[in-house]
Image 1 (spheres, rainbow, N blue to C red):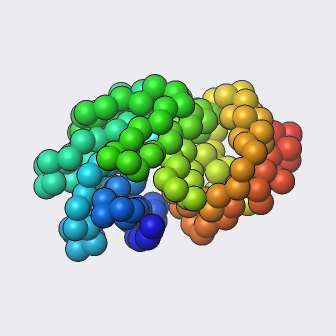
Image 2 (image 1 turned 45 degrees about the vertical axis):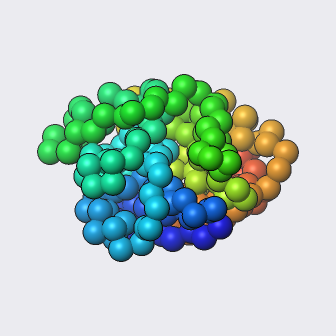
Length: 197
């Protein structure tokens, strides 16, 4: 498995291309992501959103149109794809598949696991492919997603951190902004973050 990353837009939102078994998975195509994606895929099979904030989904529709592939978006954030109070010029997009909670998908032998961790926003999720977890804006290296945005919930974030702390395996984490970390490293910080919420 190979993972390519490119920070997009003024918020330097990480767009990922995960290639495994000859299939390319595009995670969080942000602002003006299409040219970079076109240069780095050979067999794109799906667009996967960790959540619905505009800087993660800006190029959803452009990538859908370019490659004719399906868009997978967590249920709680679908409304954000067409109605962004922060960014009214957001290009609207429509998911082909709505992910409801924790859900495992399979693409001709490649398993993709969504895990629902609301708090930063209602649909906030992580995505696991192989030994990698793409954490969106749920958890960053030594930090967590903000909970002071519209539709954020500090109480939901506390519950999500408690759920995250119980994961009994380790994987490299690829967040929506910044550098990589690991599940077990960030589990050491969950008690601190829960106290601050």
